[in-house]
Length: 127
Image 1 (tube, rainbow, N blue to C red):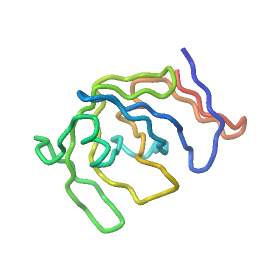
Image 2 (cartoon, helix red, strand yellow):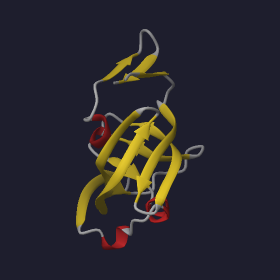
Image 3 (cartoon, rainbow, N blue to C red):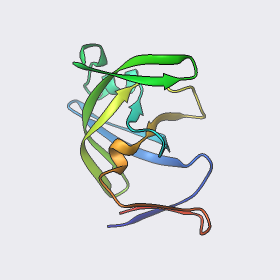
Image 4 (tube, helix red, strand yellow):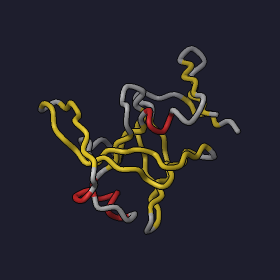
């Protein structure tokens, strides 16, 4: 299985499926190879059945406003087209509004796959 997307800046992945115990959401996310963890909003995590307020783990992250602690948990599944990973660690953090983008897809998802970003040829591939 291999999925290829054209490169845009930022690298926007559309229709990413996030699955939890009470259902799923399909959201647009930015690929962030510099982020160790995938970031999803508080409200989106609640919709699919998680309560970040009672997540047992916290993660320190660096933001434009300094270092903050955010809830950290694992979601059942994240899928980008046919590329699907289970038990993906995510942090609960609302990223600044950017044209409907609802999260950052980080290394906690990408580590499950072979990924290629080929700027010269203009594609991102996950397999």
